Length: 286
Image (cartoon, rainbow, N blue to C red; front, side):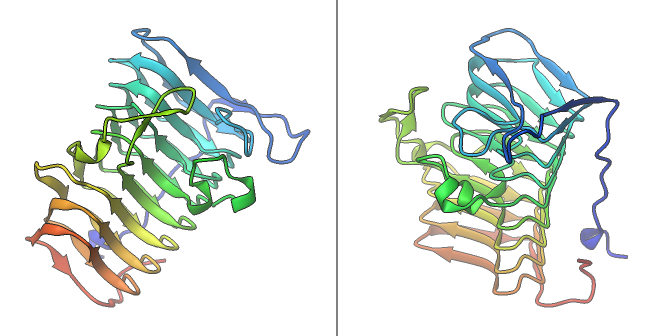
């Protein structure tokens, strides 16, 4: 079997479990790390079940909220099952590592890197079967009605060896907004679109219901790289790049994406090199 097309397998059970009560539909528990700059946190080997409260601001399964710089903080080898409102959320938090976490059947964006969150490392995580909320259930100013397994508002952050498979809408979304946001949700002008993207290397997007990798408004004058990505059998588009500059696609594999393997719109200086682009094959497993 071609290893580029291999299936993904993950274990969801853990010895330590945090489970939200089920008294209200879509309203579980939530865990929040709030305003703890420089306080090292290690969360490892925990199973989060029925966490998050649908349509409520800052009521996510696990959230780091404006905790500033957190070097040496690690969120690793945890699982998230059937979260009602995202999985892991960073807002105003930097230099944290999210690694080897697994999520299944979350609602809304699963791993969400929000405003003023930079230099975080997101590596070797697997997200599957993420679902969107309805438009009427959305939090104002958020886009969980068009959910992504991995969603990034701010940068730079590093995405390395992550897998997004079988999600309802998108696998990865890197979107640079026009303005940044304070904790009270008012906006200020720093123009994140001019910030160079962090590493995006060896990530896999497979069998997602809309787009495998969606990148919007990458407008740095420095070169941005999409390296060694494997993008297979997404329902519409494998890689979609919109209104962006100076992006190099290097060493990637695209196959079995139904509409387009690669689509670019309103872009300049897009380079594709050492990349395999195939049409339909018999190798990709559902």
